[in-house]
Length: 292
Image (cartoon, rainbow, N blue to C red; front, side, top):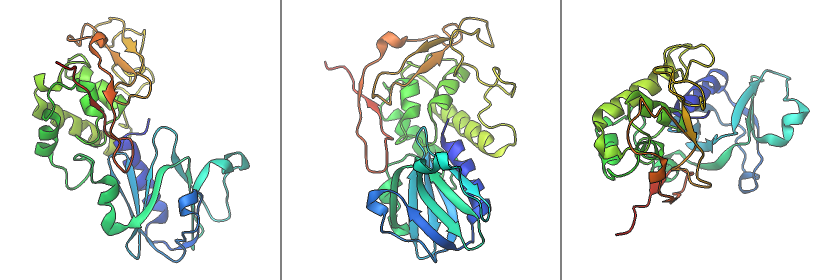
């Protein structure tokens, strides 16, 4: 599932095919960008912040995109095209003078801005362990700013720490041995942040380690709890439970946990959240505290 490590790997793959190459033809297939043309610009790099991809071009222009759950990028060689059945999903076409063509499918939050204004799209995000400007202390400060927020909801809030999606939030809750609904302020947050950063970097940089949280890459044994509803816990054998998401509530997505290995509050403590979506994507999800 697309998380910060997913997007970082996409950026590396696109850099291998496009970095330093000149755009021979561009096609931005969304209404607000349909008349914009990137032809003649050189692809400088693909940078990431959390789950956001920033394609930077010569002339100080950046194309911003977000994969969400269904977006993807693929590259074809000279003279090759995508299968006809996929063409209706294409949102971006970047053909280079060397022949390689990048195709962006079902991309979200597409925007073209001066590179100096990238902050208007990603400035609301928290620190990202995969970036050179990673600030662990700031991530700790942001997570503790609302200590009553449930652990998994806090980790999903991209304005606190960017790059952790639902898989990592659930797996980290298991690793630290606490219920997903434990108030984040009850944990050793500096240690939590350090473990999260290490996990995300390992996933994004070590061959064969992508989103393997148990240390075992065999199918069905690569995650502690995520996707393992009704299966025995790999540690204690207790049946892993799953709580469905609250509709249209990104703070309360599908949640997996082992009730024995993860003591603490249960899903009956969930409080629907009010979502304030700043410009740049659905990244903020702060649960509302009960009145009184």
